[in-house]
Length: 245
Image 1 (tube, one colour):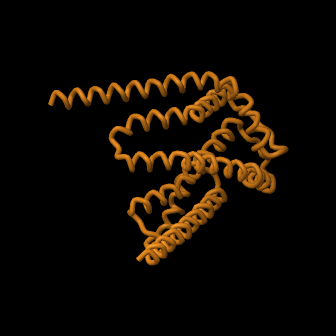
Image 2: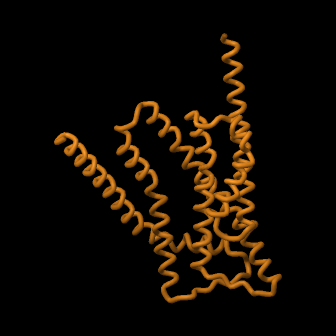
Image 3: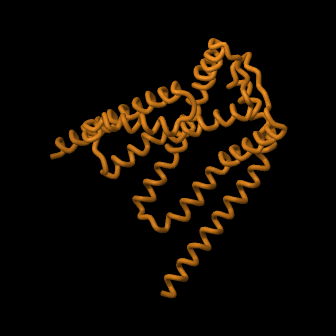
């Protein structure tokens, strides 16, 4: 019992030290991020606010609040590699070698998919959704005056939602890799998957119904692409198995 208590205390101590490293790094990165928060806000204002739409500040502290939020977001992006490293080093001793390899293989695709989702959401906001919303408001006879804080929060939520939603193909791949689901089963249950995608998109995606429809279309496309790739891989492996036998 003494050894178990000592091991538990060591794990707690290690967890505390790793969390402390991440927290200190986040605090330092937040201070650095605050210096670059103004250009980031200006970039959002110039690239994502439609031309002709006036920007208003509704409270004396609004600009400062936005700069603090922006600096925290920048700090989190900067510290993502450190956070992944510290988390992996903490859990690695309890993993088998194949599990470690699987985790390592998923880190880079996860980051790439997240930033791909952020980039696509940025493009949709800039070229499609925000101009449409401004035009629709004017057509309804209601002049658009967008709050800078509300606009920033909306943009951030949309980008975060897209980044998380684009983890969907990786989750599917992991489930098929682990043998929890087969491509044929996913094809048979396609209508239930579509229903789940619609519900998930409605809950996760902020903003108008137009954005939710766009997300549903993208996710269904990703789902079908994953099924096609998995089906081809399965057919290739079956052909190679039959040839060898």
